[in-house]
Image (cartoon, rainbow, N blue to C red):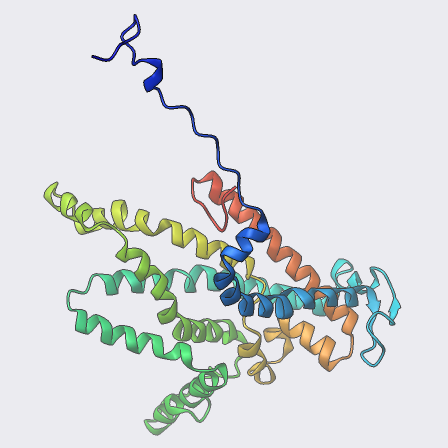
Length: 326
């Protein structure tokens, strides 16, 4: 028989000594251990450095009277003079800022919820064949360039397009849609909605597929209607991805589609179509005011970072992870 201590605990000889904590491997050994993964990630990391981080050095142009034919750094330094168009209220800049904010608000309010609604509708379809067919039709416009999208809208809604030709043939008054400054925001929003809604539904459909189906079964047994299941199960199940995408959208809020707008800018004029991105292009590349354009672009980037950090902090206060955990 084995002996025990007076208090009935196991004998001292039977107690295993505590194992010492394993020392973490040095970084060079971890690098050697994971060299295959490092080699696979190296091309993507190199592209990220070359096209995302190295160009950040070009922000010095915002503090120079930059001349492109001089060596980098040889242009005259002017300090904060290039930022005067922002802080002194240049009318052209204020017009671009106003148009950018209007487009941002409209697209966040109207465009952002549409993929969520489409994903919910597709998720409710019982036939997988019908669901795949609808998804294929919705995804197709995403793979079209903005040149093709704008051309399609012009052929349909232009002065000599399909719609006005039909109205003219039947003796009805034609509609001024393409080239109308008053309807330019609605035109841009409809183009973005048609082109990108289908593609954006992929993320929400993936989030919906992760919701446990037993939750719906239990709710049905308890007598919950489809509306209550949507409110108490479906929406909370995709809340995380909705918050994440909304944060990313806010960080990119001052970028509202350069290529889409520049293709249609001549038809409606700068007053209705100038945004911050086209302002940078028209004043920098076209107008030669490289320093002013770089200053506006730098401020736009800083504002985007602040919006991401602020929205991410709010997400943490609401109990969501956001872009990163605190």
